[in-house]
Length: 256
Image 1 (cartoon, one colour):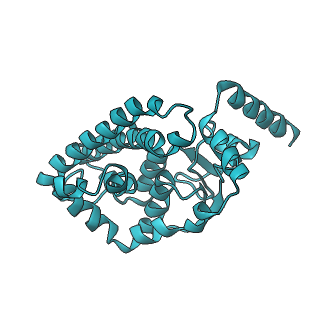
Image 2 (spheres, one colour):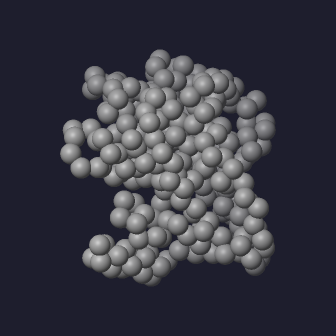
């Protein structure tokens, strides 16, 4: 059994989609990122960066004690190695796939996250809306560029890493499928190869199941005060707050 410390976001969906594709048994452990669960000592023991998703595999590859892993890209690579699926063992194709996994982790995910922050959340945080203009233009523009990178790759390949469906597709799809909402719906007309791929991957039954896992968790209604506190937790983290959380985790571990 694999415990999945999860909240329904693009990074969380990567893991549930992979687990569904591999047919592995798993248990969802909700991490309410708007409620501060990511700072709880128990979670910090397995995810020191105070970010979900993270997993704990109670029957790990290689045997032994339960194995915890954080960072969605590392989790997918681990699950691929554990099951022998969606990541080739032959070096040339393996690294052709991994380069796109790292591309998503370093480019598409962070740029879309920043674009979403400035375009959507930022208007509730900035005192002067003009403060948002450059950030919005910068990051939405970068997302547009990255969509062009994917479209070019997919014009010559069925999937991101070549002919075969792989963890490169699984790690990228939860972010890429939101491009129309983040930029504009015209993105699908301008990038038809990307649209073809987004639709094809989204039509896979395991992808649909993984994407729908406990969607209701992220659809809770909040009061104005709860929403204010949620924004404070999500967007005003400092090293002091992280240090305090880690010290609490260390004290709890020492008491066990």
